[in-house]
Length: 278
Image (cartoon, rainbow, N blue to C red; front, top):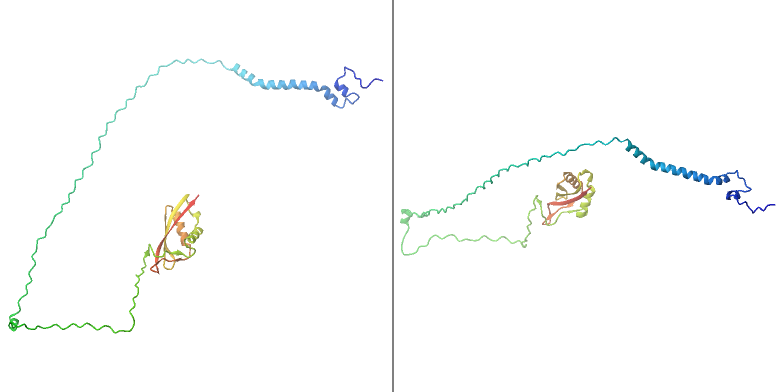
């Protein structure tokens, strides 16, 4: 009986591995033909690579071979005539403007008019008539003339037993609009801050066309009963002014009117407004 561990030296590794096994299963055939398939694949891949790499060069060589022969063009140098220089005509110098006319100095002549002296007429009292002169007695003795009646002052008013009282006279308050008052008008809904908040809530920015910072100054008159009148906005944007006036007029809360000498008066109030629009 032959020793199973002793192999023939002419056997390959695959024959030794697949000895006493089913060689028709497929693995043996793959391993047996592996080197031949690898060599064939290498040759085919190398051929495809060379064809792909050499195709552009072959195409360019064929194009060069099919190009028509170059045509020779004779290019003779032509002398270029230089253009004559353009001589600009000198513009005549404009004469200088005439000097402004000299204004003659106006000499103010002051005439000293001396009024002619007028002699004051002499007032002469005519002499009394002859009949009066005959009745008048003349002599060295002084005569008494007609005495004027003695002046008697009127009696004082009867005393009622009450002391005279002095009342303070206050200046009369007119219906004019005051620019400055003793006590400024005040918004009853929280002062100036409350009025600004009411204004911002009533203002509709969608009705204003414009971008950037818009400014205006609203002036109105606070009447004696606390209502507003003569509302006017002065700014560069008409839409902004119109909406500002509408917002002020829509606030129905009254004001405390301004006072002069403790009396309510009509006073003018200025309210600046500035907003940013994007």
